[in-house]
Image (cartoon, rainbow, N blue to C red; front, side, top):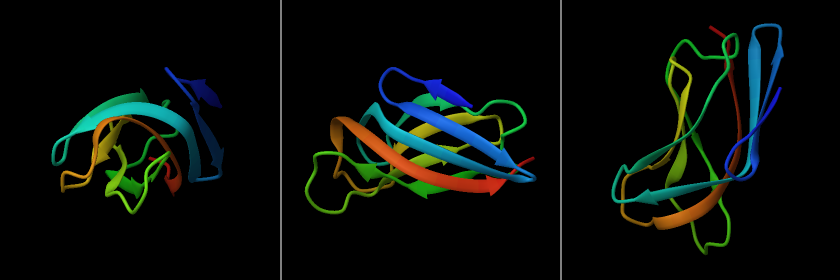
Length: 102
């Protein structure tokens, strides 16, 4: 299942009880320590039982950035600055994650 967001896309695939998510070039504005932006919602049947955190690759930046994807059991998907103040502004994020389906 593919979902196009404001920019880029998020794909979900369920194989048995495991969900694989691929997020590519999703743009989000992040600022401040632990700042977050809602980027989408995991469809019913693909949601995790528990909160998931996964590091993301940030496009067009030098060095390691402490940012990632936060997936809630409700299905809400956030891009987050995982502490620190390294990110401030709008960036493109990509990552892959997997989890047991609820």
